View 1 (cartoon, rainbow, N blue to C red):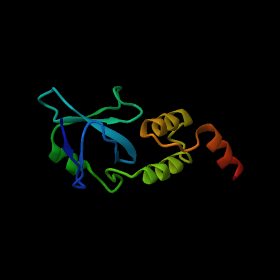
View 2: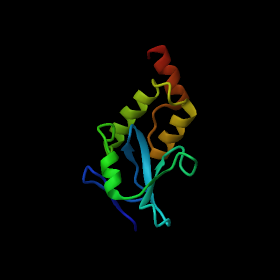
View 3: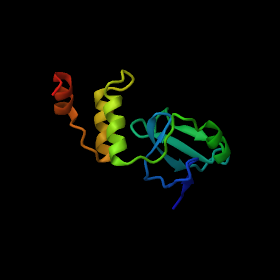
Length: 118
């Protein structure tokens, strides 16, 4: 099983989700000799949004305070709640992320309740 050490010291596998640049990502190994691994955004994986990373050193250099590493379910719930107030994300994307994370954040009913202040 492939593993990647995050700059936080946490070790993840391709199945693990981590917070990178304000978004949930997974990594996957690469067969390309020019690419050490690929970062795949959880919702957009496999599309044009995948990020080829040439080396772990390059990954560490790109890591910023906008990246937090592996989050708990509660931390992902807080991220989802904040993301639902952010125009960069749409409801379908966030519903799919919540489902992928296995976190019930209320979906449509939760959005209605939040909109009504309940």
